[in-house]
Image (cartoon, rainbow over all chains, first blue to last red; front, side):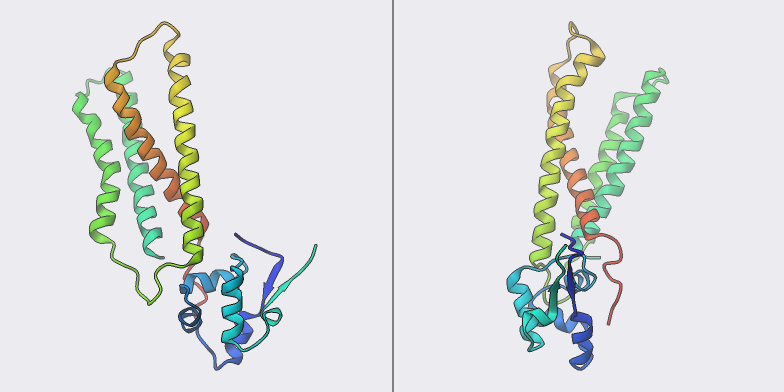
Length: 71
Length: 144
């Protein structure tokens, strides 16, 4: 489940969007707060639909939220 | 900590206690301390109480969303771990008696239902441990 190659900017984006809490983001994308915590910490790689929902919540392309570091 | 974690933790604690007391009773019996057979129900009762405690005392999770894709994945992996544990248990109980009791020994057929109970406990124990490991520690950290 953990994916150290997948970096994310969720924490930064949350703060740039009116200091959105993990709970608020979780409710918007339809997951539990524990899952948001795990994604932010890089302990869980979200499914593609969830990744898109997170990106849409922040109104940014998915590449700005998640970056895959090859190798 | 969500409900699944609380249930798993309760089961792991009660099963471990049951296992501990069970081993103590078996060892005492081996040394002929004079324990009645009914005493062996005590560790079984302790182990079984985990499920009952979970059902009575652990309420539903707070929040609008109680279950998501990560929970489903963890559940699936935990079921696989439970299945693997049962498989291992069946292999062990199939071959260990031959090694311990010898090829010509015989066992009472009343032991057979015990294998089913053992497999059930094994499955629940492995599944609970798998759930706790996968959720990991610090699930509630980083609140912002």
